[in-house]
Length: 391
Image (tube, rainbow, N blue to C red; front, side, top):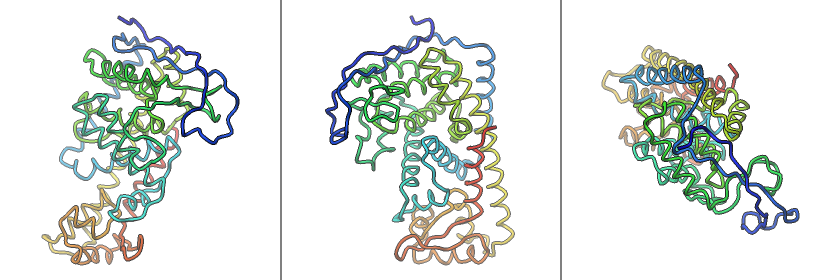
């Protein structure tokens, strides 16, 4: 039985660049690098200061309260919060995109910018995490990564790495700030992590924070570890019953102070779990406050539209207006997919909203007419801006 968290140890390994991804680079001479050996945590007795546990408990109650507050309004807000969490998680990796760019990237048949497409892929990973939360295991982690990286030919989506990975600016792991464990250790380390994640005797939010830090220490993929690790957080929030209906945008809280977040991961590797738990508690409170403000703004926007829409009470115009709160960029194909409206009839329901100033028409590629709601997009961009501020 492990009685307390141990700091990681490091091995001495000879650097011999044989991977195809390193071929052709101007590499330094052979040398020694020091991959991490993660501590085992399956039987960890997680010892934390009382104030850290109290803050985590308060944050857990806020998660449950926020989840319950939305009640019957889950349909519009669940997808918005999921997308917002994905965008914030991507932004931690310096992958930024406007709400409009993300909306255009999600359109069937639409063009997309690279960063926006990567945020959309991250949304798919988050959705996979939530869907697979009942069966949290190595396969579900690989599925999250596959959804995230499916369009990246440089890597192997859904497959654990078979080569070194490191954090640092150098072209080799020699002298890197952090080097992930040797790939031979990954299956056992993931199995140990899953065993810890399934325990029922550890407070939920500290357990989630430690599981995330352990995953980032294992660094099991060649790329996308941070985003996959934050998708794992969403899977565990659902698995532990802290969320039942919506995504709490924890990454939007972590984004407020990424320096503290990365420092907390380093402290965890040095044997101190308190900072990462504190970081998650603070991030949760910030994210929920931000999420509540977004929900209020979207409700107000939708309610104000009732006074300017001219349509019969049974018209599909109202359904399109409801759709805009979660899909603020749309085209005829999306209306057909979401509402069953024939593409030839789409203009009957989009024109009244355009005349009312709710929609603006533009194009997104040849013969592809696109409409967007500037009010909803502005609310989403404001959410992202608030997430990037230190509070």
